[in-house]
Image (cartoon, rainbow, N blue to C red; front, side, top):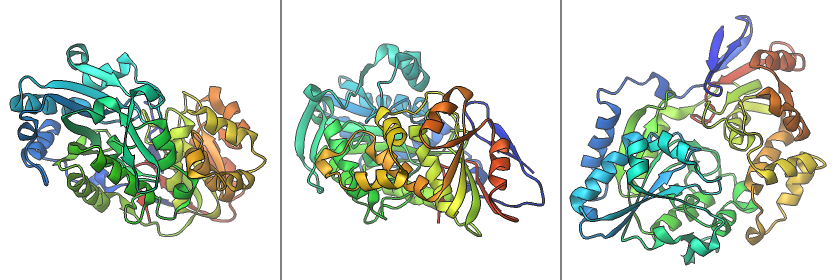
Length: 425
């Protein structure tokens, strides 16, 4: 059996003997009938029939300062199929609108011009007003209230002072917020580091409801919803994409209701139930751009965590050419005595003292406490990964051979070709 796994921009082939016990968990998005409409037509159709909202042109009428929150370089949002239509409709409602594209970097690094061109094309980058959010620039933030958790909500002044605040995005499963998209444009998208740290605190990450595909009772989601409402996020255009990063579904309208409709659609396709818990679980981070670093790759690893039995072996196939992706993430795992000791320390940290990257190494420590993890990654970053407590391999077939040596007789092997696209139940 040969299974193609997304890896960087090239992919990688997993070769498994037919006499092994193997199951493959994939989102049904990959097998859904190809939409009759083009990507542009799907987005336009959603914008013509907004959920719980008037058309964007009507919302823009009389609004001088309009801000569109846009996803950054770490998200494969097909902005070329969204932003031109949002700009056009805003200007239909108000030809004189002063429009800013605000790049929602959250806690990530700044998006480069080259990356902006890749997202939007030269025409938009050269002719539209674009601002890249910096969560660490406190001078650029405004405090607009207190979230249900008690954390202050400080957001980018450009968003706070908009006459009309709207956003684009895409909906996928998210390993602690339940789903991406919608309200995440505000928190963490254009929020300050203070607010992001408060939202991603140890107590919330430790909640059993802060998991993939779960919104109800999820404390992180609750604060995100409140942030979107307090910031007056009026309208969104969100899409669902397939493995080729093509739009297969779109929703538009009210920031909460349209997002919920998009999550309901995706849930029907992405929820998977394994036949048995895996002795060996193989996952990826969906290839480029999501597998650029280890920090982001924790997401795909949680799918393997959900599929594996306690003590099962996880193989994570992720290029990680940019390295660890977060200095705090790297140092915490490198310097800790053990994952168990690291977790003990994390759980004593109060909400208002949450450290950068803490949530990521908290989830990573949770996985390492229960699983041996073998990373398949680019050669130049393997020594770094070993410093952080991982084993490494040059390709997925070598990693599988390593795992099979310790997995007992006839192990159950679960392969998750795209770990960020499924909800394992």
